[in-house]
Image (cartoon, rainbow, N blue to C red; front, side, top):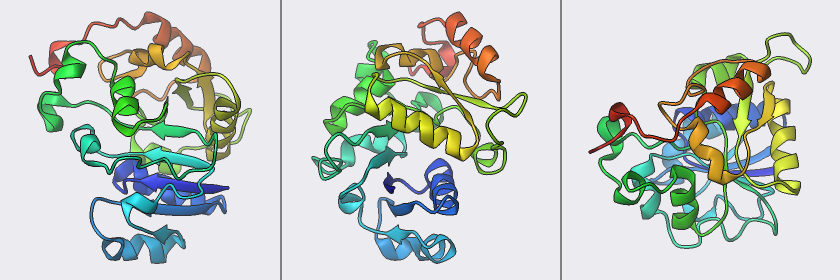
Length: 220
């Protein structure tokens, strides 16, 4: 599978390593030039490219950059992916810690809906609540008791099927977290965020979430 990754930070860089270990064809980028990614490219055999080219002919695209930088992506950043290829966004809105105020989100727009609007494509929300080191090291085979579950918010269809398969390949239990309109259930400050729950506990935590943004995760 050809996977394009926009962002090479802790989550994006970890996914480069994990997907290459699974022998997927990976292109990846950061906000600078491909030359600045030579160490990771040499380590993994992935191909470093300019951000505008990362999604070209991809079967799956992942956007993993600071929320505040999403509007800086070039117009049509994921348009060159294969027809029907799903787009994952791993982002979190950290208004006090990093991003400053994003008015639309503070006014009630969901983080993932905002990202989808900015990049001009529907998205799935995955990988936003797991620590990068656990994503790198804590995957286990299917059927392992207590296997870490990852909630996946997005629409049903082939894109969801593919993403469930890829999460399972990475060693985590895919959990249907509902459509993107329910993605608030896994945003920062919710019971599931940052936790290594199994599937049953993940579903319970998603159900217990409330949409109100707590003071820690608000700029207002």
